[in-house]
Amino acid sequence: MDRKPTESTTAIWVLLNIAHKRVTQTFETELRRAGLPPAAWYDVLWGLEMYPDGLRQNQLERMSLFDQANLSRTIKRMVEDGLVTQIPAPEDRRGRILSITDAGRALRLAMWQVYGPLMISEIEHKVPKGLAQGLVDGLQSLVPEFDKVEP
Image 1 (cartoon, rainbow, N blue to C red):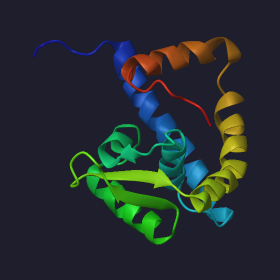
Image 2: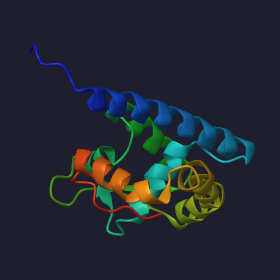
Image 3: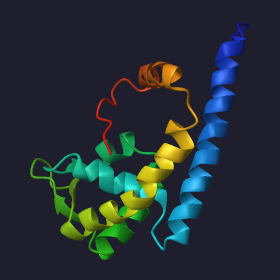
């Protein structure tokens, strides 16, 4: 392949990764300071809360930042902590359906008390209002299957 990415494409790649790293570090620091689990746990709980009938692990993996091995370890820990349940999938018995528990909902809400204000200070206050929707649209084009974005 002789074709190179455009300057804009390269800038998007670099800035997307740097922005992700900086925002994630800030979120992790503040959650730790509040005595809460890592941001990835919030992502799992949020994903499961959006689907009250539960999700298969591979579905959750597609909508999170986890690779399969890390997600499996995290889910195991969250099940042990009573935040998530795992039941055999009725259609194949090898797969598992994951669901959030009441304790998981309570933890997600506690994490949201840190997470929500950070989203405002680290994203909403920094991205000019006139650019926000364009940024959302551009990112949505990278992950079109991810159409549920709610807190």
